[in-house]
Figure 1 (cartoon, rainbow, N blue to C red):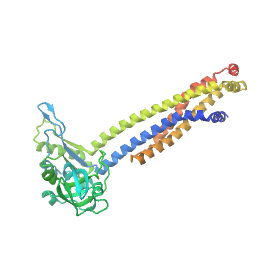
Figure 2 (cartoon, one colour; figure 1 turned 90 degrees about the horizontal axis):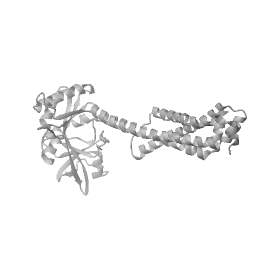
Figure 3 (cartoon, rainbow, N blue to C red; figure 1 turned 90 degrees about the vertical axis):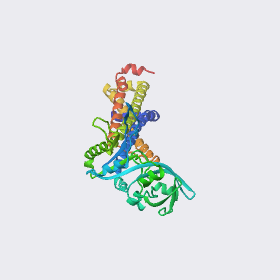
Figure 4 (cartoon, one colour; figure 1 turned 120 degrees about the vertical axis):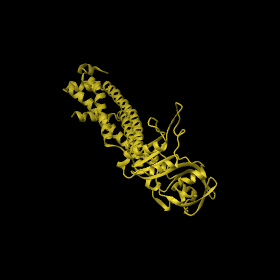
Length: 400
């Protein structure tokens, strides 16, 4: 009976009921959308790093202390081919590739494209688990001879050749001819957001001798025999490089050996922080929606004073009036919460489609949002309901 009366009261004032729900709809939709995008970003990072290989360890030049002054990353610190050779001797390291990168303009006929030239060796395919789409990767002989051969990423191949077959053609990089010997399979974005298909791959020796004229490496990527070997292999790598760099016992490392787990933890922590921040902002919208419900319910009590007095005069108990207004507040919150969930799903899917951004709506976010909406209805509806239940029937009937 009380529920039916409450629903009829809401139905009589459709516009006011809809506007009251609006704050709740926006709040719940914002929570669902923000959590979905945050979870999607974390899942994407995990997938990308998993695709890069959970058993890889990347070595970078690190900061060094020169005369009491900390230099920047790579300052006075160098990685050279001898460092990569030292890592090849380690028992837990299965593959090692030198690494250099250089941004260059590439030309074929009347087409040109600026892309990243990546210098690696043959182990790169195994380290990254990256197959070829067509043609072949360069050989060890190409690396030893600093051959001018190149394997194109799919994006570069499309920009320079369109639908034509690039293998066997010659492109120019830094005004030097390079023979296209293969096309890499499509890889997508890396964990840092870089488009891995917008790269070309050449022997690392070719980069040092023909493009950069420097023997220094920018990084060394290693791959262990199994993912379980990563912690011990990392220790072995650090020890080997300290010996190679002639560092004494008290000297700090002048390099960084970074695992995929380090990258996952760092990026996931950043994403989680942003998700929490955005969800907190969205939760404020729910609070604002709750205050809106309270205000409208207080106005409703004032407008319906005579109705309340009449109900009390013909035998309704104060508890019945209290329950009626509480039910109205909870119904507004739950219906608004339900519409907010639907809107949040829709917004998340739209962003996923339009921006190609992953979005995952966890079930606990839906339960939390709807439960919070119901709690807001009870909490913010209690005061107006209490005021309605406390009205004196005689005074209420006298109200204009």
